[in-house]
Image (cartoon, rainbow, N blue to C red; front, side, top):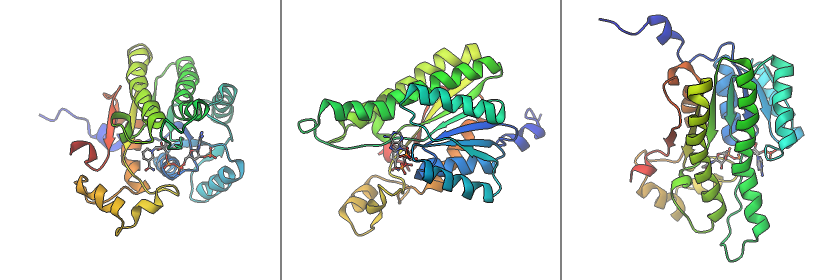
Length: 264
Ligand SMILES: NC(=O)c1ccc[n+]([C@@H]2O[C@H](COP(=O)([O-])OP(=O)(O)OC[C@H]3O[C@@H](n4cnc5c(N)ncnc54)[C@H](OP(=O)(O)O)[C@@H]3O)[C@@H](O)[C@H]2O)c1
């Protein structure tokens, strides 16, 4: 007996009619996610702090056929986050999906790191996620038909590393925040919250690690069953899946995008 509807399967990865906010939209992963959501049918609100870079990316995406608008803001600033949500609702009438793809790291041994540097990492990578989740959830609750939050964490959320006291702690906080948010928001409001936890993906900052002859690359390969580091396009499938009806049963999950790094 067939117990799955053909119509459901046919549309399960579609984001048609949805409105998505994507933070860090000018970054390697954010730009891939924004394109992925847009090409899957969503209208996309792009945000990042650098206005010029953001406007240039928005133009590129529009030319490729995506309905999108951009709003420059800092996700660690509470007023900015409120303004992002207001811009999205003023522009497209609602918010259905949050794709949080912003973030940064400034690795330093704790002995050399100042408390101010630690706080900057915590604000950028952890407090920002709280603020976005809070104000996007408030809007989704007002709308009354649930939503999806897809938060970019890191493989480093569950593993320490020298110089990463701030980053690992912030991302570990994100993973637990996602679990707690699922408890707060899913049963009551139909908002599913999950994270994607990537290992090294190609970006301006990680490009140097992709030198196949380097010791860094070769060391990675030793515990990377997939046999290579990640490309931004590798990130899109999971990001679209977690924003789409195909993942309606999933919430509070920290999803492995490590090419097997977590398995070894
Ligand atoms: N690429 C990887 O290997 C990798 C691995 C694990 C986890 N991640 C995580 O994936 C997310 C995206 O990484 P990515 O590789 O796409 O980075 P990326 O290419 O460097 O892009 C970062 C994005 O976030 C914004 N951003 C930078 N610093 C920020 C700050 N202090 N506060 C708020 N926004 C900031 C940038 O735009 P503006 O500067 O204009 O705001 C940009 O849009 C981050 O959370 C990162 O921690 C990446």
